[in-house]
Amino acid sequence: MTRSPTLHPTLARVTARIVDRSAATRSAYLARIADARGAAPARAALGCGNLAHGFAAAGADKPALRAGRSGNIGIVTAFNDMLSAHQPMEQYPTLIRAAARAAGGTAQVAGGVPAMCDGVTQGRAGMELSLFSRDVIAMATAIALSHDMFDAALLLGVCDKIVPGLLIGALSFGHLPMVLVPAGPMRSGLPNREKAAVRQRHAEGKADREELLEAEAASYHGAGTCTFYGTANSNQMLMEVMGLHMPGSAFVHPGTALRDALTVAATQRVLRITAGGGDYTPLGVTVDEKSIVNAMVGLAATGGSTNHAIHLVAIARAAGIAIDWDDLDELSRVTPLLTRIYPNGSADVNQFQAAGGLAVVIRDLLGAGLLHADIRCVHGGDLHAQAREPWLDGTTLRWRDPPAASLDPGVLRSSAEPFDSEGGLRRLQGNLGRAMVKISAVASSHRTITAPARVFDTQQAVIDAFKAGALVGDFVAVVRGQGPRANGMPELHRLTPTLGLLQDRGQRVALLTDGRMSGASGKVLAAIHVTPEAVDGGAIGRIRDGDCIHVDAEAGVFEARVDAATWNARESIGGGTDAQGMGRELFGAMRALAGTAEEGACSLFVDARAAASR
Image (tube, rainbow, N blue to C red):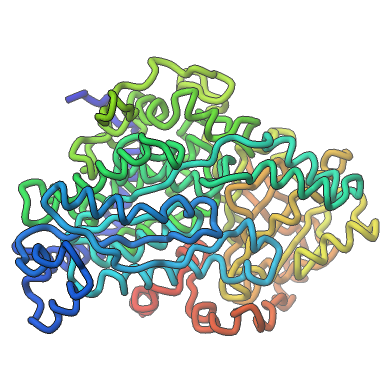
């Protein structure tokens, strides 16, 4: 086995701090999943009527399910044929069933989970359901697995809230072994920079709807994940560095023999690691403090999505692990930025994969002592074994070492010659509370701003002010009332072309919001996820038009420079919408129960929050 160098002292220190902070909750979690383990197939404990219901429609698999001697895989799928990233999964259950039978086991679709697309709902009322769809997915995953018919599970999902939701739900069944099974990215279409340029021209009134639609359709053109490095592709990176994929699964195209072979391999492997076998590997053990730290490092090293400043906190909490933004900030400051993938560069994920991809990134970070190698990966090896690429030797799936060095230094570099000495994410704090900022796509000259506030209650109000010619001079656009408890914390990407255009004109601009921007955060400085949010009395609600706002992403500071007496006398204003229509009225309980952004903006940990407040 390859020996790892000494861990970077910051990695060791942050990990030890997380272990200490999480001691009680992690211990309780591990005890719970240990109690749930059974030596025999789970369905053997079911009553006859229960079991008969479970195999009634199983066809050729009915005898094996009735005998109760072999492993049964629960398939939890996010398939729908509206979402390009999940459309390829339509035939996965058929493939998995056949592979399971060949390996002496069985497989059943345990249930489906919703998979909404932020690209479709962007700027629409439906976007206010986006973040909480993660919690719904988690609950749907738990419902799917609650029949207790399964000895293992395959989780089929790729995008945005889907993978975090699947993991959060699956961790409630952490005694089961599970493997994440993706579908891969679509092939490259219109370059992302060209698409962004058309969007900006449209915002300026220089491109009509037909030109914009043509550019969008040429960019999002087929089955597979969108090719920019947003939350979906950041998800796939996380699954690799956490050891939850078969090695190299992240960025293999859908509809290929290699993709099918990886799905078959995941099926075979998950049957070998059940409680009845000799290599029991439960999900709740694989997802531990070290794998969560690996996820934070991977996020920083690749300039990944800011959404994971929320999702990783919630995933960790589901496994009894407590992390916060200080952990992410501290790790990011010692992690070199190794990639330039749009929006942090001009390349897409296919170019990144061609340059060497995640196998090269993982190998490099291991060599720098910035990842924990000794995690228990689902494939049976440590993280060194994850840093390999799959290939087909005829029809046989094999793995090999990745290129010795990046094949395109404009997209992928080593830690010896990184794009930046620090990673892409920073924590801000000051008299406005705490926030996150993604700097990997922001030029160093734009990482600090001191300018008057322009206060808005919706992103549409910002766009209307721009169209009216009212956004002149330097300013910080403050968009409040966009937090999880206010309106579900929608992404505010409709502001990106407008603010980008103003910055290109020479104005110094920035965004400050208790809402989200996600993996598509671009070249404009954006202090996001501000907590406490305005509806909870957060300081962002005290800001008034003309207040001097200072944001320094390098120093990790943001503040309103207002006389203390005046500031303290102000009321915090800026609640959410009335949340009616497009199903928003159904999510009132989730908004009411949601934790802060730094707590994961999650409605599922009510008991944990109550205990913490006592």
